[in-house]
Image 1 (cartoon, one colour):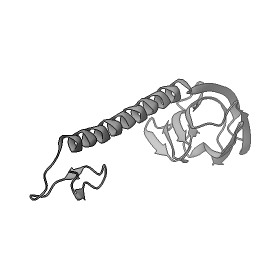
Image 2 (cartoon, helix red, strand yellow):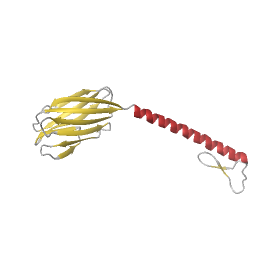
Image 3 (cartoon, helix red, strand yellow):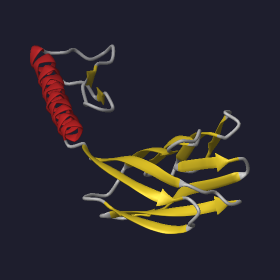
Length: 172
């Protein structure tokens, strides 16, 4: 006969010392376990399918442009989708000014750049270009929408030169 006590989750029999199990009680418990295992297996298969589709759906767009680093202000970059992450490379030809950085949709960003003294520094921006000592052009993400990235170019001192910037923009 089925027990009076049951397990919390699957309601399997928990016989006490004065109860006597029957074969059909074990069969019933086994059917519950089998149904639970089948349900978990189906859920895992769906999760695997969703994960594999998610990996396939990653899309990438490259935006390349030049900009006079002496000009501060907003710059709009049109893109075909909403960015989830951005990797950046920026440089001024003929100088040591070089920067690489990233941005993520949680607004985390970091740029590593080489200053005129040859040392490496980092900043919480997407791009930092320092063509000469004490002169910087710093690029922050102002906003990201469904079809554009708005960059906020700021300057410190009197940076000069034309930067070439490449953005690797990803979404999924």
